Length: 365
Image (cartoon, rainbow, N blue to C red; front, side, top):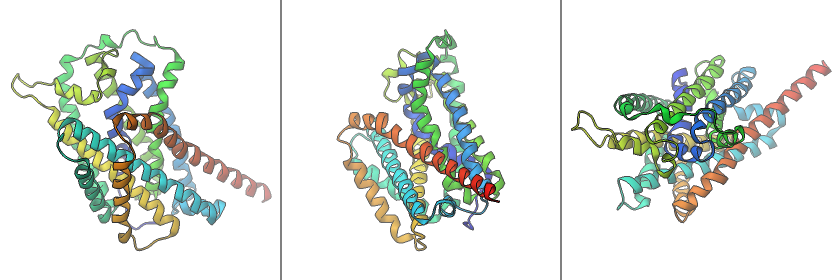
């Protein structure tokens, strides 16, 4: 187990940063197409599922204190499965890092840096992420703590000023959407919430192993509250009919804010804060990919691999999608499928296989 340790709150905000940044940007426009005014119900229900997943995943470490997920896999299934699962998880986080970086590039080019080549934006993002990873998870967690606190304060401050624009009657009538559509709307939300599986990487770094369940569940609860309030606020401002027309609905809400009739363009503050959170998400996924790779092959000398990994992420990012429409299709279909497979199916299979093996041992005894 690693000697570097992080606090419970740093772990909680680590989980929040894994899920919230990209979900905030595109969730409303995706979710409202399915569940309309009752889209917030999809988030609430899916948050409940996320709490169950967090409970299950954390149980693995409570029953196996002091071990990484790869040590647990090797003890239960053997070294072959350790390598296969490790490579699959490393690949998943690698693909996610590519997707996050591409989303970041598209947003920056569309909003504030239209003349800047994507390779420059992506290159700067990768260098920042690699610099943070070089200094380790403790530094990543401390910086993430600062960025998330500033983000929440910014959103709380901004809410006070667009509160006057809200009309909560836009949410009526409630429960008017069929449960089939609400469930369908919950699928993309679940693909984000399921990223609580990052606890499989994070758990060995926590100061107190017994608190891993608390960290995972609280992280999901904070995430669910944040996404629910964001969606409710935007629907109350724009209505469920108009909101899906915006490509970046959260950004559009900030653009309408005026303070005392002379302070405008609060959206610049949103961009600054969102850039910070997306850089943290990119860092977390790239760190997780490298962590899984190093753990799988028990690599001790990690620094030589950082720059090649970063270069691969940037190269795939710039050459994987021809345009934004193609990237959106990837997110809606392949991205969701990958997330559900790697964050739910694989961990649950490992959990139940381990559970059955433990029962067989008890029966033999």
